Image (cartoon, rainbow over all chains, first blue to last red; front, side, top):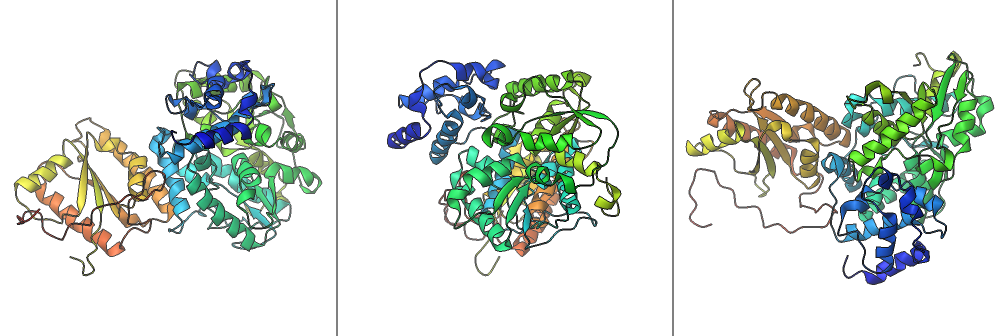
Length: 392
Length: 166
């Protein structure tokens, strides 16, 4: 990170890191630190402020979940999560790649999408009863990387595509035939958070033009990370106005009266606030209103909920270790403690990471719980007139 | 060789106990075959994970060949079965990305099968040649997309012929 002192100083000012008064609340709150991982946000901040960043000397920068809990607690309003983003960008500029989980396969896959020189075959998950538009329409459904994730994690049983299909069905039930494009490319969230800004920018330019040319007024997505990226990270790359960007639950919450929701029996559920939807974007109520509108569902909150919700330790595919596993196990135990049969998520990363933690052969039943996306619960409770010939 | 001077850049992952030895057998037996590949020796084909094949493709490899022991012969008993699982996962991603399936191949070649190694190399080279250069760019890029500079592709020759100059 040597010759970049001016850049580092700018980042320190921009993220308010200079305001740190060394109280240590960030490290005390950090989920990684609490389970014994060697991450100390306080040490990272002081390193950046004094011009001697620790990022290069230990691997802990890659273990930050970027969940934003430290930002919530910081009395001086230091934005550590943004600092991590910038430090990883500076690290990326120095072309030092951390050791990525899965060997970096997912980053390779995303960078190949960024290159943009191949034609993806990514719509095989669509079923005959799904009504979608190929290129233009008022509503654009941003599906995210779920086709790739389910291909990469077959042992999770096509879990994330269940949410994607359900999103189409819910939109159809609202009378919307969304654009689902074969030219959609990864939003670039993970590459951005891994420090690969040039690939992110290539993806952003492509995706912005794709959606602009569709004429869409609303971009709706079931993925919390895609939403964060579109809402917070894309605007500075956009030529002109972006469409309105919403999470599926936000759109549904506005139009609850129009959905023919029927009960599917009494079920206790608990809701996992994704860190990108919750703390990053401030969307806590919409998913809860949606769940409460489904007849027969009883929502039980976990002990740490809303702004205090614990991350799935998805970590933008930048690290995965036994500390991430411990974070996931704690959260699953918390979910089980509510007595809920189903843990409801609003982000495919949460689904993947909790299902992966449940593979543990020793903990077995102690942490097992049914994991569903909000969209799947909605789609399952649609009346028969709300679906096509054959629903779930 | 190709008229315009382009030759495929193929990466071969060969298991130590069978396929790499099979490649050696081809060499020792002075069997001629296409030279347009580089080999990475792995202890078992089951170690070849999707990330390796995807990274090779990302960096512009025109073709990737994974080769291991025949079923029942794996030095680690079931490693080649793991290779199949890993390879199927790799192929799903390759297809989703729109990369031609013919660029990636899984083969079983034993230590004694020098002739078969040569034959697979010849066939695969022609298969990849027919697909043309990788659409992901024929130059190598670093992990973050910086251009790396390569020496020019060596002039066409056949393995087994001595060349006067280096």
